[in-house]
Structures are given as structure tokens and as C-alpha cells.
Amino acid sequence: MAATITGVITALLLLLNTLILIGPMMLVALLKVILPGSRARQICSSVVMAIAETWAEICKAIFALMTPTQWEIRGVEDLRGDTSYLVVSNHQSWVDIPALIQAFNRQTPYFKFFLKKELIWVPFLGLAFWALDYPFMKRYSKAFLEKYPHLKGKDLEITRQACEKFQGIPVTVVNFLEGTRFTAAKHDNQQSPYRHLLKPKAGGVAFVLAALGDNLDAILDVTILYPAGARVVVDVQTRPLEPALWRSDYQEDPVFRAEMQQWVSDLWAQKDARLVQMAEQESEGSAQPAERAGSE
Image 1 (cartoon, rainbow, N blue to C red):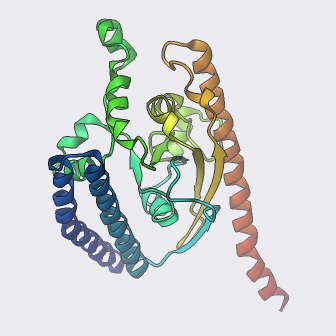
Image 2 (image 1 turned 90 degrees about the vertical axis):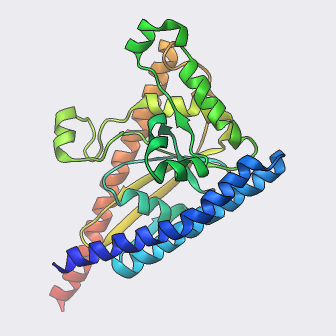
């Protein structure tokens, strides 16, 4: 019962935070459309990002007050707000987004997701996504393109046009390569070769890199672990982004497609091994107090 009450109060506080700040955000976003000149639009974009970062900081304070959590965040000491990043992370829980906020808010440019075009029609959220310059993408399936071959490449062109607003502006783009949250049932159904991860999808990250690769400076390889208790470990490793990762067409070039899939598989194998190591470290750390208590 107490947990339910806490959950309801937390949700209400988060909703209140959103309702209070979405008004100023919408106003500045409209000014960005109305005001002439790229400089004025850049200033408006910066103000919108500042409002979003304030919203995120208040969300962090609400979670800290209502659901105290012990955070261990590694590898963020050298991150910068004037650098563009691609974040790839494992996906285990709805807490993954608060974990990314905890790790990156005001450490990197405010992060963005590539969203399906249909989400712009979701009440309130669609407006917020538009105000935050989230890129809306339209992807055509292979079967669709076989039926309408004249539209080949049109989806990528639309997404690249949506990303033009990021030219010269630092950005952090988040991509969950697994495409869905991890569960044991999904893991078994996929026959995943990884112990703690689902199979990653190379096509999604290839699409992001094709649209935005030249604007990105580094990849932030994020591994999130939820040990027992109210504790979250976020491990961040900064990796270079090689231009070869977006040198060709993922759908049309089978050699390039195989190379991308191998790159993603290697990245995920390393992440899986890191999760095993992190879990072992947590297990050893939790066992030490008990051993000391027993010896006394």
C-alpha cells in the first residue's frame, strides 16, 4: 500500500513539473518559428534546451525525494557540453531513461531520440518532441520498397532533412539497439547468444549514422546494471566513431551491411562481458560485509 501511494505521489509530482514547464517551452518554440534569422532560432533552441535540462533536474530531485536510489555512475568525468555524442545502451527497465538523465543531464547536450513520425500526433508529448527538435523519421520496409521502388532512399532523405537543424549545434542522440526491454522470455524466444542482453539491431544504428554521422564526434557505450536493492550502476565508455561506419548504404550494400552487423555484434559481446564483470563485482562487494560480520 505504501509503495502504491509513493508511486502515485511521484507520478503526480512528475506531471506537475511537466505541466508547469511545458508552457514556457512551447512559447519559446513558437518564437523559434516566428523570428527571422538563424541566430535567433539558435538562441531559441538553446533556451528550449535549458528549460528541458531544468525539467530533468527537477525530475531527478523528485526521484531522490520519493524513491531514494544509490547511483554509481562511472566514466562521465571528461564529457563535454560542446561535443556531439551517439549513446548506445542496453535496455532493461523504464528506469533506463531516468538513469540516462542522471548520468548525462548538464554533462552533455540534452539528449534526443529518433522518433517515428506518427508520434508527433500524441497529445502534449508530440508538441514537446517538436519543441525539443527531436528528429521524426519515416522508415520504409523492404517489402514496401519492392512495391514502390521510386520511394527508395526517400525515408533517409526525410530524416537527413530533419537533422539539418543540428548543423553546428552539439547534440546527444540515444539509441537502444535491442529495440525493446530485456525479459527472460524475450531472451529465450530470441535464443540470444548473450547472457544478459537481447540481440541488437544493426539497421537502426546504421540509419542514425547515415543521417547524422558527420555531425557526431564520439560514441558513449552505456551499460546499465540493477543490482539487488535500490541501487543503479551506470558504466560509460567513450569510443571513437569511425567515418567508415556510415560510408555506404546499409540496405543496398551487402558487404557494408555485414561489416555493420559484425561491429554491432562485437560491441554487444563486449557489453555482455562487462555486465558479467559488473555483476560479479557487485556480488563480491555485497558479500564482504557479511564475511566481516561472520569473522567478528
